[in-house]
Image 1 (tube, rainbow, N blue to C red):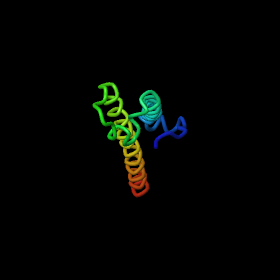
Image 2 (cartoon, one colour):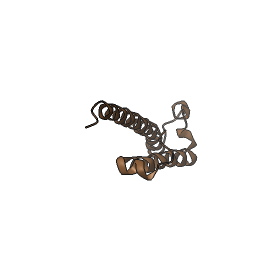
Image 3 (cartoon, rainbow, N blue to C red):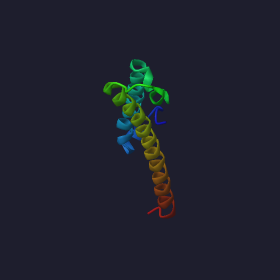
Image 4 (cartoon, one colour):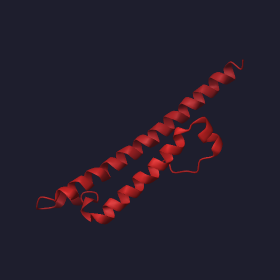
Length: 97
């Protein structure tokens, strides 16, 4: 995902990268903590329960699912940003003035 070391030059050019890196780590920590607290929210475990689940477990499961979605969006944002910067660099090379 996004979790990689940032250099000051990157953050100077794209300051959102610092906040997104922190968000990525926080999302992963939240996901792991929720699964540790509520093992039933692990993948598919939630769907094999014969009885209704307590609301806290249902909400924890939703949060776990959403962390994966958000981390995917962060990765997509980073790739799109890299593509945008590469295209911008290509334009600068074509028109150096």
